[in-house]
Image (cartoon, rainbow, N blue to C red; front, side):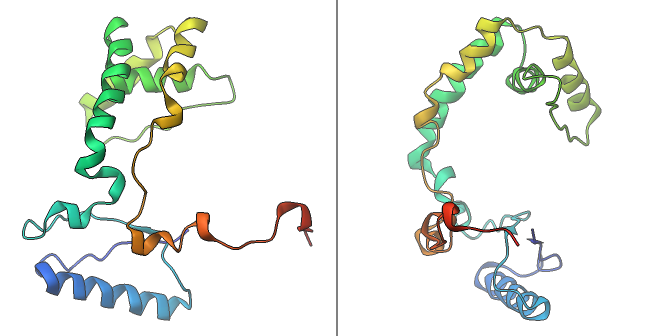
Length: 168
């Protein structure tokens, strides 16, 4: 997987930044002799460009109310346990079995201590099922990518059926 970050473009703003980013991407693709970038990080938000242009559809306003409802449902469960949502999530993953472990990443001691606090949460079998009972079929609203990028996703890939595939 190739992740791409265009550091050093922070002095550019608006359209000039976009052009610089595009040029850097194209040069990297050519230099690496590849056709696409798997992951593109947005670390620096240009305050002169509407955030709706920068973000992907899944995180745009029309999907916010739906996500807020999901948040509220999970928060009820966490509050009942006297814990935060991240602690509940970490505990839920930790309780999936001996062969499953949550992967933590933080740069702040406060967050580290919160994460460690998840280890002391005991979830009953009923409490394990409760987060799963939230309407997960409709949990995700909005596409991952803009319409111009959707054509390049797995949904539109024309690959042979698995049954016809023979490993070499």
